[in-house]
Amino acid sequence: MKKDIKINDLIVKSGEKISRIITVPGTTYELPITVINGVEDGKVFLATAGVHGCEYPGIQALVELAQEIEPEEVYGAIIFIQAVNSPALYGRRAYICPADEENKNYNHISPGNKNGTTAERVSAFIFDEIVPQCDFHVDMHSGDIVEDLEEFIAVCATEDDAMRDFCIEVAKHTCFTHRIISHGRRELYNSSAIDRGVPGLLFERGGQGILNWDEVERDKDDIISICQSLEILGGEPYDNSDGQIFYPRHYWDEAHHTGLFYKFVETGDEVKKGQKLGEIRDIFGNLLEEITAVYDGRIKISNNTMGVSKGDDTFMYGNTRESD
Ligand SMILES: [Zn+2]
Figure 1: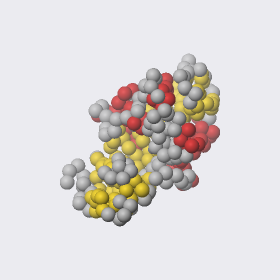
Figure 2: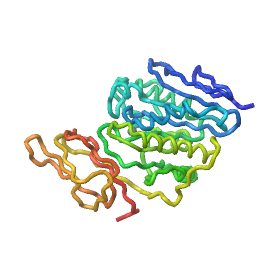
Figure 3: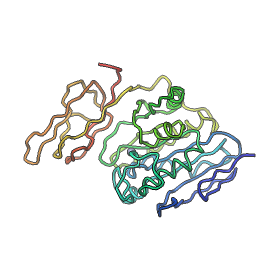
Figure 4: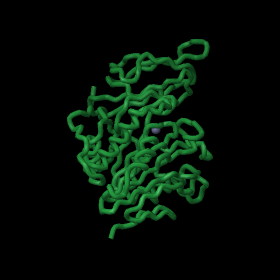
């Protein structure tokens, strides 16, 4: 007999779809969730969105998919968390969780701490109660309000070669043209792979606080295609095995000064090692720092704000060569 999906006091039986808010134990934090438990056996798929609350296309994609997919179509089960960080969504805040006592960023604290701050408890709830039930996890992001982004899919650089190769194969069933390897550790999808042994991917599509409906459709298509590749949904997955450009490494540049940020390249530009990408000046116009490329690459994310604080990200660019 096919098993129930149990998440705290939520029990979803075979053939049921339930959407509701769960109050995370030990907090007053409200987590929206939809569980679609299929009639037939199969894998369990998890998609999360809104870890950063103003990254809209992924949130909207899950709002729609949760309404559209019915249990009769599902082999196994599908779990959607439409907005992990709903306080930031409704509070219009970039990066951080405003309900957290220390304004923590969910992508810096996975897999959480059930005795920690509010966001750490929410993270622990996801990683202790939900992720272990799942076979695959996709975390859906965009550039945040201040970020101009060229879309890409990211694969965790786990030490488990078989898992990494499997994630790459699944990533090829999406329409993303650009694929990067991430050496991150505390993001949700990296933590799923490293801490819980659940393979995962990260979508980066959209940005600047824009709800772009073409991006929503591509996010939906890619989630469906991944579920098809995992045989959770019927139909043929998209095949992009020849179409993805691979970046084995990428570089985040951080501002070393607080000041005025000027950029000389745009997202999507190809840049050369040593090329001047931008500069930071003080309020009187004096040069504080020049930002130059550490290797040949392609600008994937660039900051859009005039003012920056020391430590803020300015550019992220991918490098298509192993060495230069
Ligand atoms: Zn994000």
